[in-house]
Image 1 (tube, rainbow, N blue to C red):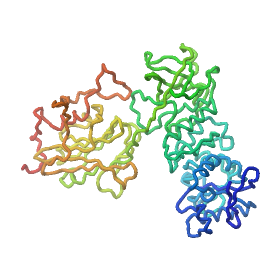
Image 2 (image 1 turned 180 degrees about the vertical axis):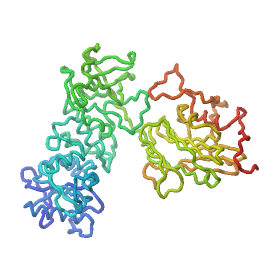
Image 3 (image 1 turned 90 degrees about the vertical axis):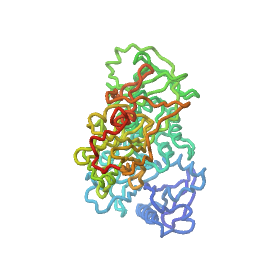
Image 4 (image 1 turned 180 degrees about the horizontal axis):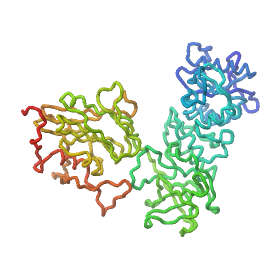
Length: 580
């Protein structure tokens, strides 16, 4: 273990029982941190991290500590072996420190009350980082400091406030929490490297494993496998697809292990409870996880239900897996059943069965768009005004807003489920209607379509199942030789998942993105047009070979855009533009 002398700022290495008493620093990594290479060339006073090092050493000296450990300058990160040892030892180093100084650089010294809902302490990013979770739980004694190194309080004196911020009730006895609860504590925390979502939790579960940067999400799979080897706590299987992730409403098959800590965000009340006293241990095999479970059938034998030795909140609500046969193994649903114990007393179990649940890669779908700006400036210049803004069905958190300073048009926020769609209706002279529709495919890709016909929003929005083939670029002819084009683009100014939908009106009638038809073996494979009576998509309904899915939305929209049954635009309702 390499420690920094608090007086002469030199580094020294210690081993085993020769390690002296030391203080340890917990902080967020920011710009220009002082590294071990910087210290070799003297104290780098020009670096922004210099003040943090000096403040920590000054505080430690005042408390009588000769040595301090600071991750930024006490680890040689150029050595993969040393970095691996440090990551595996870090929890113990924080646990064995005499005192931990938690430096919150974004907490103002002028704050009057840290308990206020909008206080800088409550909103400190220190509470949102992955690595600071173990730095909160491992040390016995933590002192919190603000940006000026003025003391805020200790983990003990701030216990209720920290619990209200983090949701962690086991601040001093974290070993009493279930695996699912510990995962829940990490579910909304962030790490710079994807692999660190797993590595920052190793100490919390008593796991040692070599870090392999570059393995991506597999790191979290490895962590869960190691946890299964160490404990029979079945709450590790008590995860669900988090809110805001894709949910098709069909059978959502996946492996037994969660793809990321985010899947435990709803598991904060899950704890162990012995339902099956004779359950053998689970083992990992090359066919997947081997489990011996008491089960009963559901859904006419298609689905198998297996109660876990786990409850949600109280002992009357047993959690159960939903399993489906898949070739030579089983797969599980990303949701759980909640079954009251009194109901289980009357269940006819099939007996104990052996199940191999394979683990797919289960790469999460692309993230949902957070913002979509409907740029209607081109149409406004031609006299159109926005008459309606719609989202259907009205579920989740989607909402419209006119952003301050953005004159392009309305912004759609938090547009999520893939059967949901949004639309704006533009009118000219209170008669001519142009409808722009936005949807999300099953693969979480945005699509757009255009209707140039005078129909009501109640008729077009809830009609059909969105087709994966719908496009993010579309051009359609409209009246008087004009055309309308809608193009989706990523927009850096709107953040990571921000888009702009550019809607333009062309008096020359150009169709840069015409609707396409698929030709195979010389035959037109496009489907016949169907009207608005198409079957509404039910997100809870699974379609089989005997039940064809409803007509794709793009074809219904194409029919409406053409206007008449002859495929020509209805010219009786003029758009008010001069005919060419």
